[in-house]
Each structure stands twice: as C-alpha cells, then as structure tokens.
Length: 306
Image (cartoon, rainbow, N blue to C red; front, side, top):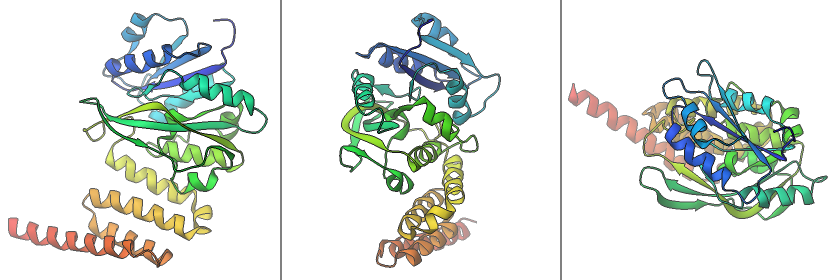
C-alpha cells in the first residue's frame, strides 16, 4: 500500500461487526478499485477486528478507539489517516451500489477546478426485513452550484453516505464537529457548502438501511436527535435569523422531536414561534393546537390513572 489511492472510504463502526461486513463488501465490489477503506471501531462490546481479518484485504486500515468517542470523533480519527485525494463516507449498516465511486470520481475529475464535493440520491430500506421503503429524493436540479441554502434548510437528504469530496476541503472546514452526536451530517454539509460549489448527481448510488429499533443507528437516539437540532439552531443562529422561513422549519423539526419525547409544552411553543416567523403557513397553528390537545389529554389521563 505504498502508492496513494485516489479515494479514501471512511467507515465508523459501533458494536455491529455482522453489519460492517456487508458495508465493507459493498465497497470491495465497486467497479472503481483505486481506494482504501479506513474502519474506526468506536464500540467496546463487540469489536470488529475478527471481521476485518476474515475479509483480509490490504486496502483496509483498521483502528480501535480505547473508549467510545462518538461518530463525529470516529470520522475525524479516520480523516487524519486518509491518503486519498478524495474522501467519502459510509455508515456500518449502509451500502454502496457498484458504480457509486466510479460515477462520482468521473464527475470530480471532470469539474475538478469548479467543485469541492458531489452528492447523489439514496434508497432507504428497512434493515430487519430488507424491505424497500422509498427513494428519498433531493428535489434538486442536476449540476453545479452553491447548495448552502438547501443545506441550511435541511433539504439535502441522506448526506453522509452520498457525499464524495476533496480531502483538502474537509481539512479546511475542520472535519466533523465533535459536539454533535446527532445532526453532525447536517452541520457538516452546511459548512462544506457555505463557501464552495458542489455537483448534484441525480442518481441512486447508495442503500441506506433504517432500523425499527430506536437508537440502533450510529446517531439515532432521541435525546441525541433533540440535542443535535438544538445545537444547529445555536450554531447557525446568525444565518437562520436572516432567513425566517428556514428558521421556522428548524423550529418545527425540533418541535416534532419534543412531541415524540412527550414534551408537548415545549413542542407547542416551538410551533407557535414557527408560525410567528411564517404566518402564511397555517400548518404551524394546526401543529401547535394538536400539541396543546395532546398535552391536555396526557395530563387528564395521568390524573385518572393516579
């Protein structure tokens, strides 16, 4: 492995060696072969070293964290080890389709002086039963432009496994923010796209496997999801205040999470604040009233139960 590969594929893993094997195999099955795979093991209960040894491919670099550091730190550990000119990411329960690296590499080479990153569509499947759910499409036009507004408004879906970008750009923006245990992908895309242009490829090149179990994904815990959205609001407060409709959308996204967490008071307040920012969208009032009703219903039910 003396010659530097063109692409470095980063895979953080956490106590799921049986899933990791399929993720790695999807990279090894790529039609494009000039890559390295960097696996960072952030789990302590079920290490993945046996799986990596079984695969036995010298393009795989395997690193263990001595304690759980979180997905953002795991990716940053891998970034420091990359030798490729371009970097892409894959979670340990997701997969690439065979032409993913080749198609993205060809476009990066073609527009090398114009873009810093490229991203595409992904299909979502239910992991436990391998059932196709949908193709979560970004409603964007194919081609080159600045995607900052779309990133800030959370219109870009399935970010991490669909992105390939220049390593120098990742280093420039400082990699992943270690304070994010969730929504780190949205934060990464906002910073990636703020002062550069990207290319949107209107093709499905990634399979994202969702779980029926809450918290089973690398950053799927509800508490972390709420913290992540709150961090986004705080970190991009200046940019969001200049764009009230986008800020309203952030309020509603956070409100639904609080509602899911049975904090209906917080949810209704956020929905109301969203409506104040975007008074032409009466869905905010409907959501607010529904949340108030659920709060009243829960209080009444709990009193009767006691």
